[in-house]
Image (tube, helix red, strand yellow):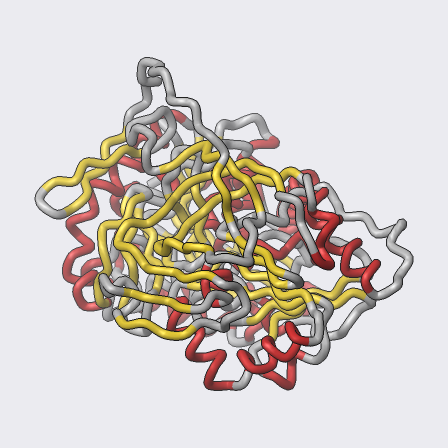
Length: 538
């Protein structure tokens, strides 16, 4: 049975996800079979597993750090906000339905069996499970029905490391206040404190650390520095959104939609010298980019209304008329069409005009498409003609069905390699059973008997016309050859020397970042003490 340890934080974005990933990589380096776990994640950045099931992107990143294949058992509950007061609820990788915050709060305890089946499966297969909390355990209005912080720690019998963010200021108040608001039995579960994102001379911090330990009687097991590690972020607190706005020789602007999803699709461009990747939310920030990307969104129609209301739609249409490359991904692709219709109320109902940059119509359907794909770019015209014949891989997550009209060609040819037509119960995943209107997870450890699979033929995806391109495929730029072809094409259109432009191997780059993260944490955390906490448990 696995040893367990849990990372909780004093607030959102305190660094829980990265610290969990770092511990996973350290334990892996030390020879253990380690796996991440988060019972409930709220994020618009999601991922489709090889089995066609949906999970939070942060646990995928942590699984990469641990050197294991992503599985929905690592994140049995995913909440994808669809409005300010409601979310799509995904259990064991499949959509359960949409709920308001109040409805989910009343319902969520019914999901404890799903959580514990997923957690139990991981404990049976691995040596160490590193659990991540969410938000803060001191949210006293939510404590009675907690399933992700101290409630999860109790169910898992996990000792807790509590992380505070010194970069935001008030870290001592964060840690003392959080511990003070815990119940006595919960305080006893907190075995170590970590001060995260520190810049400067640690010796100046030492007197405060001694006072902190004296006041609450819990040791500080490390002061982690502010790390310039380039790994995929999870949520809208990402520093990318408020980061570099300088324009490089080749400038790519991503429209920051209110409900932007899977913005990590564009990370590969950040690794290419001479390229600026900027997230913009107003006409004044847009400037004159070489390519404008409309990203995925959890609410296509509402976010298009946002663009229409603040003038960005008009600016994008003007850029398109001037010959700039416009590239839409998933929800952003849907916006580029002529009409959007929602007869089943998937996004609140109704219909609206699209941007009318591609001759196509989208109708939102009640069933979500979830699949991983491999494919190739079709003969591509316009500025991005260098994409022709380039191979790609990625995944689709969308509710809409898009129909192309005349005078438009598909952008890619793809083959599904995992989706909703696959068996639910597969090795390494949590299967599902719909029962009385809810989902009950059932994790199987054995490999099911091999069944002959029907041969899949390539299907058309996406659309292109002139300098306007769109696709449903997330991760379409992840392969080095694709990102490099895009940037070279943009540079050549400006008359730049593109021979020295080279993308990086994104997968290999991430591996170096996980090792850098682990190395920094080994240096600044008391790993001997953390191993002791892990071994002793509760």
